[in-house]
Length: 392
Image 1: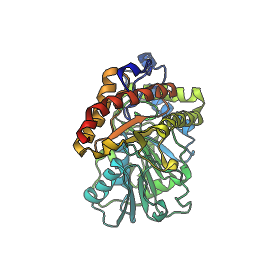
Image 2: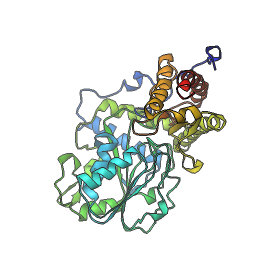
Image 3: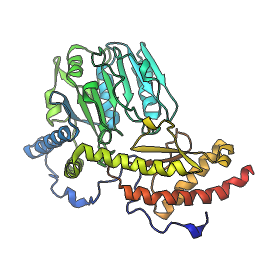
C-alpha cells in the first residue's frame, strides 16, 4: 500500500483511548453550565446532585434496590482497594489475573495485605483462566473485562448462587457495555472515565447485602486509612451510599457524569449502550477476519472484549523481529496515525504484547471505527516497508 491509497476520510472523532475515553457524542463544555461551582458538596444543592447521580446509575444499570451504591475517592483503583482492605481476610481467596490490572490486585493481596490462604489463577493476555476451577465458597477477586488484554468473562454462570464467599469484581471497562449479573456479584467497582466517557478521580462502589453483612461482622487485622472506612461502631455508614462522600468530590466531574447518564437514558439505556459497544467490536472483528497482518489478541470469540479491543500483529516478518523492533514497529503505527489526526492513544498497554488497542465503548461511534480501519492498513504498509528489510 502506497501513499496513493491513503484513505480519503478520517474519523470525525479520533479519540480511541482506553481511558480517559471519548466523551459522549455531541458533548461540549456547555453540558457543565449548571454545575454548582463554589458550593459545598454537603449543601442541599450538592447533595441533591450526588443523589441524582447515584439514582440514575441504579436505574440505567438495573442495580437491585437493596444494593448500596457509593461514590468513593481514587477512581476504580481506590474503589477496589477500599473493598479488598475492608473485606478480605475472613476466608480463603481465589484471585484471577489475565492482564495487568488483575495482576495488580494479586500483588496487593499477597504482598501488601500479605494474606496466605490465596489461590491464584492466571492466564496470558487475550485468554482467561479456567473459571470452572474457581471455588465460590472462597472470596473471589477478578476483573470482568481485561482492559489491557482484551478478554472478558462471558457470563456469570460459573459463580454459584448459594456461594459462601464474596465475589469482588473490578468492572471498570465492562459496566455500561456488558450485561452484569448483579445477583452473582457482591462488590462491583468502576470509574467514570471509561464507558460513559466521564472525568477521572472518582470511583463507584456497589455492595450487595452479603457484602454489607461482612463489613458489619468482620474486622480486618490491619488498620484502615480513613478513606477506606465504611463502618462506625460496627454498622455501615449509610451516608456514604446516599451522596455523603468520604472526601470532597469535584462537582464539575459529578455534573459531567450526570450528563453522560442522561445521554444513556436518551438513547435507550443499558440495552442501547451494550448494542453500541457490540457494534464496534463487530466492525473491528469483521476487518480482522480479513486482515493478513492483524488479529484479535483473544482467540476465543466468546471472550472478546467489546470495549478494549486488543490486536496483535501476525505478519510473518513482524514475528521474526526482535522484541525491541516489534515494540518499535507497533509504536510507529501509533505515531503515524496520531500525526495524521486519525487516531489517538491506540498503542497496546506497556505490559501487553506489542500491538494496538482500540476502545470500542458506547461513546465511540461505529462510523468512526469503520473510517479508522483503512487507516490501520495504510499505516501498517508504511511500517512494513521500513521494518521488513531487517529480516529479509
